[in-house]
Each structure stands twice: as C-alpha cells, then as structure tokens.
Length: 369
Ligand SMILES: [Zn+2]
Image (cartoon, rainbow, N blue to C red; front, side, top):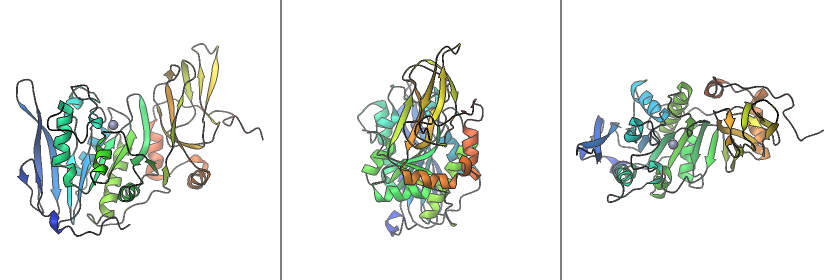
C-alpha cells in the first residue's frame, strides 16, 4: 500500500511543550494543561521517538476516556515490548490523556465533560476544552496520522473494530492498513479527537476493543499489531504489514434492545456472524413465567454486547454491524463453522471467556423452509 510517498524534509524540527527533540532521539516530556486546587501544575506525560531520518509523524493516544485502559496497555506494550527500530519519522505517544479520569475510575473529566466531545478545544474554554486545546495544538496538528484507542462503555464489550471516516481517502488507507477485520465508516461524534483531527487535515482512526477497567492481552496484541502494520505501511518500520483473513467496511450498525425486563441467556458472541431473525438471546422473567426471544434484525456481525445478563425494557443487548449479501458471504467463506483462527480467534474466545453462553436449539426463527 502506498499510503505515504511525500518528501518529509520540512519535518526535521519537532518542538513539543517548548522542547526541541532532535532527529534520532527519544524524550519523555511533560505538557502542562491544568492546575490543582493548590495551584500545582498538572502535566500530561508524552513520549516521543524520532528516527534518524525525517518522515511521517504519528500520534498514538490512550485512555482519553479515563476508564478505558486498553489503550494505555497497548502504548505501554509498544514502549516496553520488543524495541521499535524506526527508520524514518516520529512517533508521539500519550498513554493516558485523561489522567484525572483515570484517578477517579471515570470516563469523564472533573468538570463532568466528556473529553472526546471537546476537541479541538480552546485556550479560554472549560477545563476539558483547555486540555483538548493543549493536545491539539502541541501534538495533533504537528502530525500526519493519528490512532486513538478506545474500549466499550461500562457493562459492555466490543469486538475489535476500527472506526474511520472512509470517505476521506487517506483516512481510509490508514484504517485499512491497521488490519482489523471490521472498519465501521463514520465521522465520529462532533468534538471527538479523530473527527477534529481529520477536519484539520490529519487522517485519524480509533480502535474500539474490549472492556473498561481492564488491560486485555489479546486486545493489546491486536492494537500493537495494528500500529506496527501502519508504521510498516508508511515506511517508518521495516517489514511487511500483516493482513487480516478478511476485511469489510460497514456503514450501518444497529442496537438490539430488550423488549422486557428480565434475565438473559446469550447465544451469540462478539465477532459472530448472525442471520436475520436468528435468536441472539433468550429473555425470561426471574421464575421463567414469561419468555421472549431477541432476534437479529439484519444479517450481520456482532460488534459488541452487554456483559450484564439482566436488562430492563429498552436496554441495549447486542450491537450489530449490518452486512450486505456480498460482505456476509465474504466473511462466511473465511469463518468455517463460524470459527476463527489465530489472533482473531483468540480475541473472540477471550473477550467473553467468563460469561455464560448457551447454544440455541433452533437459532433461525423465520425461514420455515
Ligand atoms: Zn472511549
């Protein structure tokens, strides 16, 4: 893939937080963005790695939502696992953006704002807006690409998928290079880091994977491999990118919600292919007086699901990516008997390894043939 053929001679000088980082050097920096009640500065830890040759600049950010720790885990693995031998370009790593949220086990900032709705931020705005501004001006706008790591919201789990605005050609190439099976095409919410970055001319994607409050080994593996794939694709690392067995761009996703309050028997896992009207879960009242089947409204693949086996009416249970007939068949060809192999097989099994699943005897409810 020819994602990057430009000349980067103008990329020799890099200054972040007032520090000049020469080519060929690595630095740990502190970017002040806030103060405590006692007036002490609060700073964001940033790690910068520069190859001896100028080249693309890539930012990696984790834990923008303070309870989503997988991103921090992925970035730490990149720093402390097998050493990266960058041949050109610069990598700017922020393992934890929302350090206030991390301290309080919370998605949000202390001013109760969602930090992923406040970009590009403002130097005169709210506490969160000022933090976003500091990151956007000091890091994001100096970069050529960005990857932001997220996990599902509380009490949910996500099968690893990339979210990207694929109508932007370079963002699409970046999303494809990362090498997940699924790319969900959308711009992202207004004020999100990746949407603001793309609007500022910096192609950026997110990885959505796993759960809050955990660092999950297979999610870390997928994140690290995705970053290495991107860096190889743009000539920052040697070696060939590794392709997933199949890759689909999906444009429509839908939540399957509970019709009643009750207890759930799950039949489908994140990453499973499901047919329209297939029974995803059986719901029952506490002594089984009432039962109800939760059916898939589309042919699709399970992007995410609740981890809590009890719901109220309207509660989200399954998040499905709708697949066209062609995409469904393509995925099906690669998933013999629905089973995956290698890294994607491991992540599918491990994401929900401690949850109860039960085979549904007659999974297909509509086709009477
Ligand atoms: Zn998030």
